[in-house]
Amino acid sequence: MADRIKYPIGIQTFSKLISNGYLYIDKTELIHDLVSNNEYVFLSRPRRFGKSLLMSTIESYFKGEKDLFEGLLISSLEHEWKSYPVFRFDLSTDHIDSPKRLIDLIGNCLSGIEREYGLSSSAPSIALRFSELIEQAYHRLDRKVVILIDEYDKPMLDCLHDDSVNESIKAELRGFYSVIKGNDRYIRFAMLTGITKFGKVSVFSGLNNLRDISMLPKFNAICGIAESEFRRDFKDSVAMFAKEHGISEYETWDKFKTMYDGYHFAARGEFIYNPFSVLNAFNDGELRSYWYASGSPSYLIKLIETYGYSLDAIEGVRKNEIELSDISDISHDFVPLLYQSGYLTIKNYDPETEEYVLDFPNREVNKSFWTSLANRFFRGVGGRSVFNVRDCVQDINDGRIDAFMQRMKSLFADTTSEPEKNKEIHFQNMMAIVAKMMGLSVRTEVHSSAGRCDMQILTDKFVYIFEFKIDSTPEAALSQIHEKNYYGPFTADVRTIILIGANFSLKTRTLDTWVTEKLRSR
Image 1 (cartoon, rainbow, N blue to C red):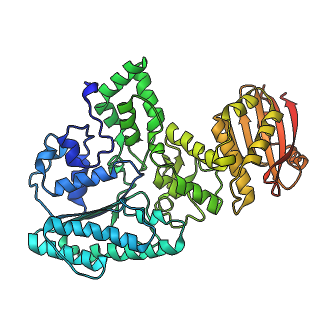
Image 2 (image 1 turned 90 degrees about the horizontal axis):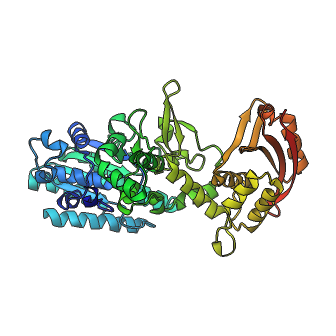
Image 3 (image 1 turned 60 degrees about the vertical axis):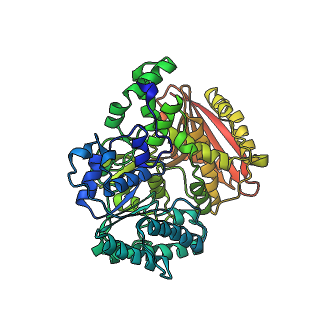
């Protein structure tokens, strides 16, 4: 029964999960395929998506812990169950702000390995020590070594905004990872996982034999909960949730799908549910933004402010596999980082152009992303958010455009965030955030044959056409709307069309003045 299900909240150790009767989504058939047909593997997945549990499961497999896998798919596939020495590293257990902290972290991991297998090394660097221990383990135990490195990129993400420290961290990691290729004859299997892939920065220059399985359809569901797995393993959970909330099981399936489904990591395959949010939602009996609340995108927000990215066109953006697989050029393009971090996901694939179409995976991520940006961009005295969504929506729905614009002016005036390098982008981003937070039918940077309209808001009764200028006049903005005929597509519409020309002042850093014009559709 559902009330006896133990949801593995925060459980990342396979042996603990199995021994204590927690729910396990059986990934062992995929794991058997992975370890049987590969020797050097790299996997990128968002945080809280089960990477650590995957690595722990692989560790138990290579340690020959056959009893833990009884009744799982792998039990009918594996017949030898050999035991290997496993060197496992988790680089997420400390905040790395200097090369010394990184060296200490890896050194502690090596010390644990020495104790577990009775090894020792007095080598002067972590790379040489690592190399010596691999060779020692092979000769002493007469078995090849398995190497598992979890969250390989965490040290680099910790200092992403400090170029000097970041380069030092990369150099240290480059030497450490190169040991793996240099000891190929002693290694049975090696796997690295992380959130991101630093391709062109040569972190893996000494380990160029890694097979990246991150976007292979075969391994699309190796982490997370596939649609078929959700339907199979959560029937009782859905029934109990539906009963508690007085809704049908169909409605429950639909709510979970809308809130937590929608991830895709390949051109083909099932959509994937966020495992962290699903498990927490069933455990608590509530639909909340669990994944988002578990770690705010502070580094993303800082990048947006540092490099002045435009937020207008991140939904529906198209990228090819090479672009999505490398975040080395984050100063110019942060879409790959949004994808690898889990804020955007693959929604479609165009085989003609070999491009992936990206969007927010689900309601949890969409709403939470824009809420975080609103709380950062619109902060009043003491850092408190001054953004009032309800009043803005009410003004728009009732046709009170002057009241809405006055509210926007006050909102911008109370904002204390520092100016971005591109101040025009800064204002455009703030308007985009307002638009997304309202939850209405809002379109920004709308392209047409005549040009590009800054923003449109569509309601049952009104069509709002916005054009924004910087240190100009609202009359010039309104004139552009007419010259470019931005309202042309709506001339046959029964709704009232309202044109808004507005000007932002760089001196006062706020919405300065605006003019409006009301048209009746013909």
